[in-house]
Amino acid sequence: MQTPHVTTRIQRADTDSIARLGRYTAATIHEAQGRRGAVSSSIKPIDRDMTFVGSAFTVVCAPRDNVMLQVAIHFAQPGDVLIVAAGELRDAGLFGDVLGNAAKAKGIAAVVTDSGVRDTQELRALGLPVFSGSVSIRGTVKETLGRINQPVVFGGELICPGDVIKGDADGVVVVRRAEVDEVSELSRARDEHEAELIDLYKAGGTTIDLCGLHTVLRDKGITTDLDDEDPDQGLGVPA
Image (cartoon, rainbow, N blue to C red; front, side, top):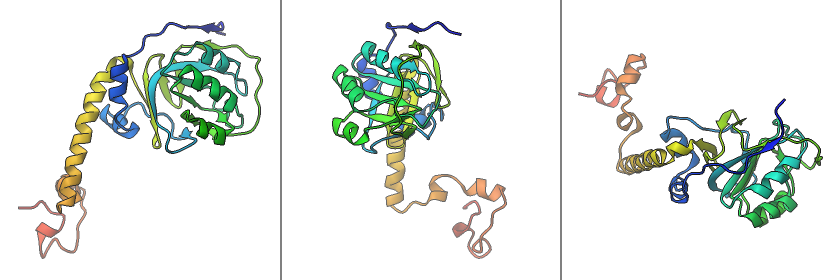
């Protein structure tokens, strides 16, 4: 069994790099970095308008116990994202408006947990981004100590302290701290490419043409009733 320990000094990406990454959606970042980093889709924002980006500050809580979350709020720095792993116990409200105000006052960027939260109307009004596995009114205790700022598997992804986390209405994604600038550039290029595609669709382009699907579909054996009379309108390779 690991000894309870709090690591307060972690390496973070610089604020400009974090802000640049934060311009892009979680889905764009996930795709741009090779479809990596997507946290379980079961973890959702309590308000779809909530969005955040910041450095991961990891904390492990025992199920239905939030004492280490309170310790984490004490030590976290402005701009940090609390990643609260609590055994994926959904039926527990380990975070609510009182701790929400404490986190907001510290300048914490967001709270993300695989457990449940409560006081969601008050948290929405507070404006602190909160993402959780559920909403539950069941209370918690303050008994079991744990570790803060150690690598943790959260929502199916390994998250290390100082990794950059982006969350929005579509989900949460993690980017390795050392890869933030590279992923930002890849995300920018992807956004530009998608904007070009949208313009081409508006100009009359089709999905099969613009996505280069003629050969793929033909090789897989799909046919249409247009192929014999007008192959250019069917799914054959155009001349």
